[in-house]
Amino acid sequence: MISAVENIQPNRTSAPTRGGAIRIDDVVKIYDPEGAAVLAVDHCSLDIAAGEICMIVGPSGCGKTTLLNAIAGFHDITSGSIHMDGEMLCGPGKPMAEPGSDRIVVFQNGALFPWRTNLENVIFGPVMQGTLSKAEAIDKARGMMADAGLNDVEYNYPGEISSGVRRRVEIVRALMNDPKVLLFDEPYRALDSLTKSVMHEALLEIYYRNPVTIFFITHDLEEALFVGHRVVIMTTRPCKPKKVLDVDIPHPRDYGVLTSKRFRELMEETVDAVHEEALKAFDRGEKEG
Image (cartoon, rainbow, N blue to C red):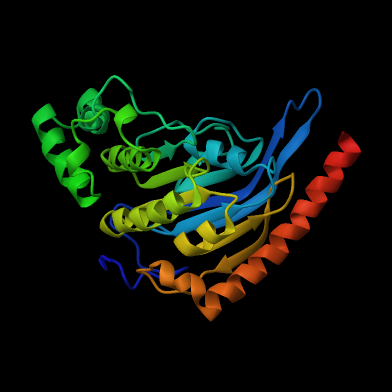
């Protein structure tokens, strides 16, 4: 396991040079304010350090993705503000952030072009944006793909490789743009448990070489605790932090930590908090349905 940032810890003060510190300050999001007035996010505040892997868990429909979309610049906010490295992305007078290559979203269903090879997919962004020449992009992509164990699938098409390998290609493609923040919306939801375990270790291997800030939404509590520096448990809708757990298990990690006493303690604490919110969501659903 690579140990480029083996001393990384939750809530640390040191940060990668590329930045990516996120501050969510008293954010409110109301859908259809003139009609149904659905309160999706309720006075949510959260600080995420540059280079931190912050895992977001909570009941389905609680507002996690709404928050991610606000950071990405896909949705506006009703009030409050979101800053990155001290600069306002959205807030008073600017309800919607501008999408940018400094914040890249990795979606659930993937977004590789099936008619392009994996190498062509990886170089597409910087070549189209003009930030790298094609030759420069190919050279950079080959290095990053080799680091991620993808050098033998450069000339394959996405349909010719497994879903887990496609996920890895997508992450490398996102990192080609040198983002400050990666936003993951349940990227491994459709994978089986064995493939997930391989992907978790692969993600950390890539992260140790490219320590960007990661905002990662998941319903998988084991995934959250294994990958993250912190786990933020959100309330049922409207969304706001209920509990924040520091995962005080040192990086780099391998799957041996799953059998450790500390991991089991953290899992028990997380399950209790999430289960309480899941019951609230279930009860509300029965009443609304």
